[in-house]
Image (cartoon, rainbow, N blue to C red):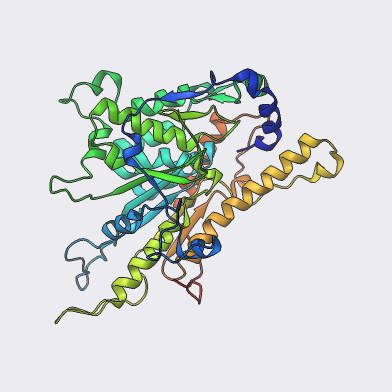
Length: 435
């Protein structure tokens, strides 16, 4: 997200010249069918002056309310979930939220893989991803050793051009963005289903594993949501990758890749992404770790289950929310200091510094709002804070994907996973938001 503020003015000046030849156009005819609005939480509805959910529906207000249903299905413990006396405790379903962060996703990749190897990875039946987190979600949801090998490979480029076609400010002038996404598009497609396999149903690929998350009985085993912003309305939207995977293989590959690219299309930094002529922006322009409604829905399901009457002979329920939420912040949570800013007087320097502070605050707020909407119960997070002490040295010069830096971040993620307490346990709030 760096250099956006400084670049946007230049982008506006040259937009008449650049036209739309810099746009990555993807055709997925059924995409609208699978796209959902993320509805406002109750608190957000109050802030926007909307009536409580269940009241009159205002013109233009989000009508999609299936997030609650998805959370309800995803967070139900497996049939007969109990812990035998003296036996190991069985995991309860968990929500895993993966943030944006570009090359910082290498940290999350290392952390997740090491947690898997340690046998300490949460049993995530609901996974949401934004930007680089959207890419991670495709591999993490499958969860096999091969899928994790693909995850690590995705964050181990030999050179930056393996992921993006970077051209800096000259490219902004010519095409309206600093980097093209064609290399990343190819990498995602090959990871989902290679060209040599995609049209041969007898040869398995990753899309089959995603498709199988919807069982033959029609019950969905996992929910894998990718978030992005519709540019025209500014609305945060999502698709469930498992639903897209039910399409014919080649079509599913195109549509899932399109959703992942839409979620990563940060304005000016990366070329615009259109699906069926509709422009989408990086989900991080609204929320670094998805929208608050996910946490609000977890809280609502938990409260409903806790308040439901018990059947005769049924053991007493826990009175606190059962479902843990895990957040991986693919990057640091602290803004890097710039002691030289006092000696810089140019508009570009000021814009870049302001942008870095704004981005950092958005990232922190996105995590804080999860606790506000889910005030009680387990909320655990990890971030790349401390990377400088390793040290992982972030290169300058506008490099977006630096192989050595990403390699260091992956190793740092493993180090954090091996710590006695890998997660930060966020404190509960004493007052629940009014619903």
